[in-house]
Amino acid sequence: MAQQAALGPGMDVPVDASLAEEALWPPSPAAAVAEGCAAPVMRLFQHHVYEYGRGVRALFLMTLCRAELPLVLARLGRHGIDHFVQEVSPVKVNLFFGRPAFVAVARAVVTRPLNTLTAEEDFMLGTLLGYDKEQQCRRYLGRSGRAQPEEVALAAE
Image (cartoon, rainbow, N blue to C red; front, side):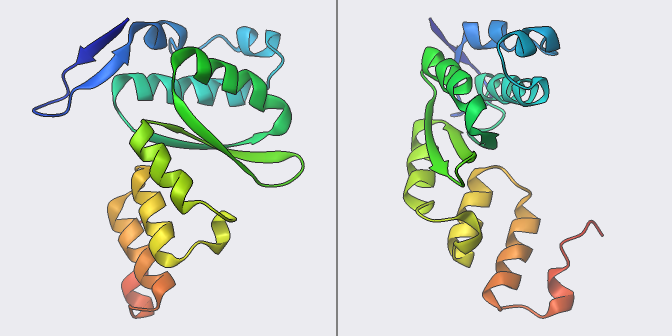
């Protein structure tokens, strides 16, 4: 049963109570190993589901081994979380998941390998994923050739 969690004016996000229950933090490493997946991957996934359920972020990206994908997709399906899979290699995939509108935009933008996205596509995707806005701006300026090298330092200053 969906509930509303107030995040502020106009920012209500549906929160599935079972998301919070399933993604209790910290998750049990034994449970992840028992389900046949690497514990670190499942811990990160469960943390992302927790953040999604609490409205912290709206879009997530995980690079997974193909063997880990079925369990993760089953959990996303149980909770009705929208997602799409991008093939990376015969053994790796990128999994995007989150709020439907965000996933739809990511699906429209990510039509080829991530390292071949235009500066604009890279900026849009990074922003949707919740990456630091100033770093995304600097990255965009650097990739698009619109800034002097000293203006686009990406490391923490």
